[in-house]
Image 1 (tube, rainbow, N blue to C red):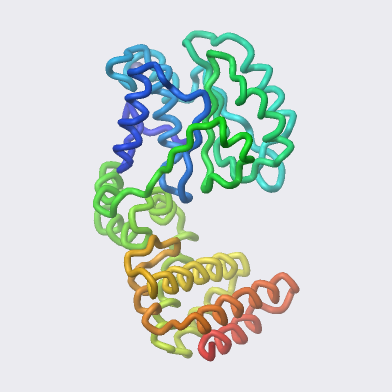
Image 2 (spheres, helix red, strand yellow; image 1 turned 45 degrees about the horizontal axis):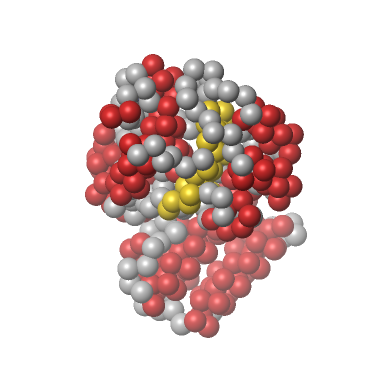
Length: 330
Ligand SMILES: [Zn+2]
């Protein structure tokens, strides 16, 4: 979680969710286990932090006030009653040992607040063993314990665990809300507008675009690739792919994004308002006009083959040359 400068995390959009949670606090009906689910970058961690402040705030009527001792400690990630489970392993899950430690910690009374909060952020990679180890604590939680999970989809958690949780969806903000939030964070307005157009209100992905040159490079290139593909401009396609091929990691990222663009374009053939997962709605729209189900499937297949070639140590330039021909002829 990032420590912001405002006393309370500024959440863009999701007003209904925040007011529901606030209502639960007012009525003393806070859940003992909360799952916040939604696409990557839509603000789940910020809301998790906001929720911890809400639960622990010393001023119930104004919670989260952002100014009491408790709120300030949560905001600076120093509250003794908030524990963030550490990730481990290749898939970024949680080890059974970590879960066991948290389980025994959960049995102990809070240090200074009424509740203890245990966070499992990015729980998508949580193994079945780790989930099972946690099950009993979530099934019969001590009165003072509250577990907060964030994940991209609900389905990554075991039904037994899920059935004990209050699951809430987090949605990306609207493009306007996203622009407003990023300008408040002092990013230059023209860059903010480009980023928001790329990611349609997903603030986390906009911030990555604005602060990480490698993300910006692969994103801009993929938008150009999608447009070239829509125009069947083989020369431009090969030129862009060859540029990407200079760095295999960049090439993999670009191929992953291009695959999402094709997915978005295919969805748009059915529903022009479909939620996008790629990086440029405008070029995906152009591409959607040229797609048939068969063409979409062949494009996905061509990208999968390119991945396999890269994994099999085929040279990057050779891979993109074959890919380019396959995409144009798909
Ligand atoms: Zn407070």
